[in-house]
Image (cartoon, rainbow, N blue to C red):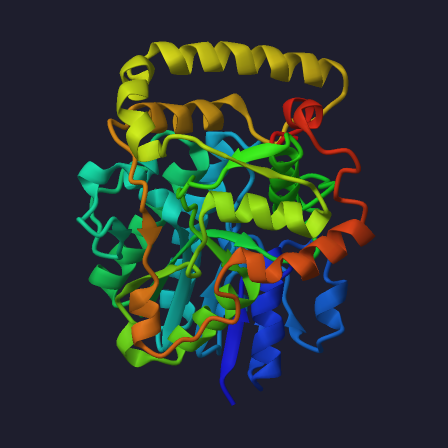
Length: 393
């Protein structure tokens, strides 16, 4: 029987990996912070060993005797500062890799979670893409910018590859799109009133409630269902030829317009198609006014003022200014917009993996049902809620 270790096992992704491993007959050891909510995993009958990636002395017994390690553990929180991100995401991965090499040198596979954010938002700029505008794993212009999350995940990935090249760690790297799906939220770093996916659905509902929206916004943000994240990770761990390779973990995708109209239909919101220039046509003239330091500085000033006002009223912001501004600098620096951009999953499919969810629209019914039951969907979406709440809180 194969024995697997799952780090970050109490999180949204980690818990799904544990569930699927148990379902497939693996012997599973789960690790996460001592203060995590372990109750769902206890019901699965897995071995539980609390540990902390920032404390090397807690890792020795955790990594011993396992055949494969699934490592989704990271600090993923857009309200966390750079020093906290460095401590967990960069120092933590060194601690884990050192523990593996010292206490389990015969490990067969180390599956590491990265993110497509390491590519940087210029992945949408056609001058950096092939004629097909498909982002493949061969893309080498990695410019994650100054966002603490994107930058530390990029540094984390470099550390993992260094251990693979220089010390033989059997690494497979997964670059994930944004993960969606119904499921519980994690309550370790701070209390979450909702989930990221629910925030996204609320944002789409806010936009749809405006009453009209273009049907030709072909922009695609890389997304993937949590069940396919876990499924792909386990699938690749069983493929020896995957070791030493990076894989995009994204679904087939759909356009932003398709998502907005699908959410409107599911929520009974009347939405009228609007004629609008494509981003491909609109961006070049618009970018002339967005390049340089002025737009990000104005955005920084405005957003910091908003944050101070909200915090004064006891509200918590979901995204700190340094994240928003770092992303704005990357986007405003683009000279063009790849209207047919798509993150490719062909490499994963070429090995035989078949997605359960081809795009987020297939999962809307189950997600909306759960979010309604938990009170996570707003009752009166629209411009007022979008400006006041949006994706920021």
